[in-house]
Image (cartoon, rainbow, N blue to C red; front, side, top):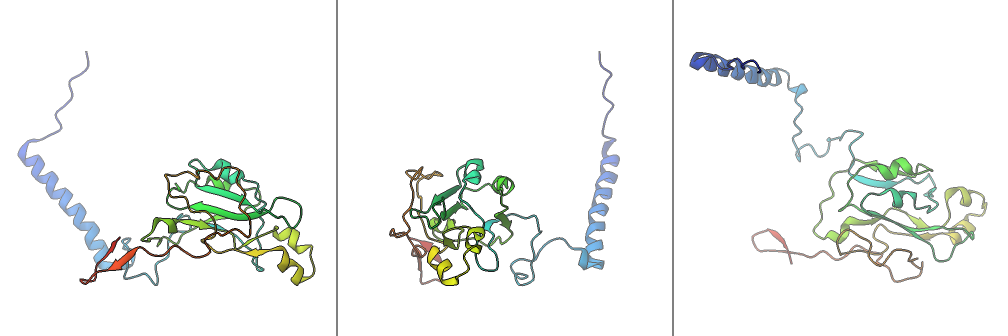
Length: 224
């Protein structure tokens, strides 16, 4: 047999003094912030948008690092794509390589399905990826949640550094915009894209999809 549990209440008087103690405890925190407002943790957003700085470890957007010349070190090895637990990354190879080796054409990332687990950053052998902390990513069209992170299609910065002529380096690369590449609209998969190489000269979307909102007379916005 187990021992009887002692009563946890002390009648009405005990509950009364317990409530009073809890009240003063909460008021103590309020008075502390009132006397020393610099210790307040609550952020007055969006009033403080100009000065607000998120924590360094806060993850909100995946970024591809580029050097001072705008070149990256991504080889298109697809290790990050394999490590992604829910298929939010798709690495597309360039159809016509300038070096004879696999070259990146587009690095597609889906913000809408990313869990920000940081697995892609940790497994990248060249430290190409990192997470930024810009959290204002609201849009009216979900297609705008699909990004191309690479600024160009072509060889890595290491390969381009071996070419002395700037004009020759320019010929080996092609500029890419954030909304270049395929835009999946079904579920969270890249249906039909597995193993498909996107030609550099293909008719891909170079500009963001047109907004699908209209201004109502009362000033409110809604989706068509």
